[in-house]
Amino acid sequence: MDGTFRVSVERNRLRFAAAHMATFADDLEPLHGHNYDVFVDVEGELTAESWVWDFGELKRIAKEIADELDHKFLLQLRSPHLDIVEDGSGWEIRYRDRRYRFPRADVAPLPIDNTTAERLAEWFAARLLRALEERGASNVRRLTVGIEEMPGQAGWYTVSVR
Image (cartoon, rainbow, N blue to C red; front, side, top):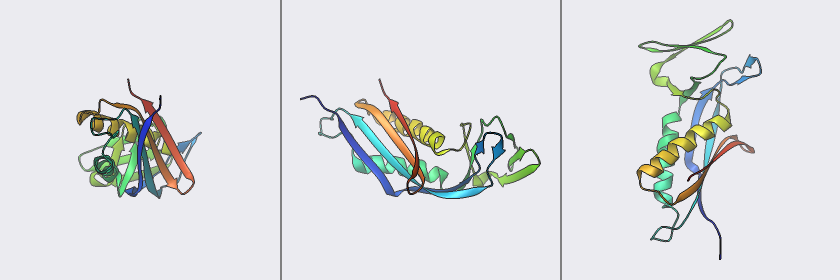
């Protein structure tokens, strides 16, 4: 029989509250926030223990990543639309006639071009995959992460491994 094994963890403790302001077309959203929920699917061969990955460990890893974003301003460092300056105490973001200043401790600077749910899912998936590989997850073949901004509104990213 040919098939695929998959495990998933989601919501419950896999969430974070964060502020952002995405850019769309030639405009910047007003500063606002979401209570984000995280969804994780991992596909791969079974280990010697007959699982793809331990649920508890998968939740711990995903929660650690979500906690990095919790109660932060999500800053898209690679935005072509924002003028971003970092100094010793924080971040200044300029867009046309608007200026924002955030203390360093309140910012999660992310190497993405926009803080859309799709880009957040891509960033999260890369961090999660790296953590799994560091723990010896050579059996993982595919990883999908969903970031839900509100019920019924989520962005997804899937990466195939090897």
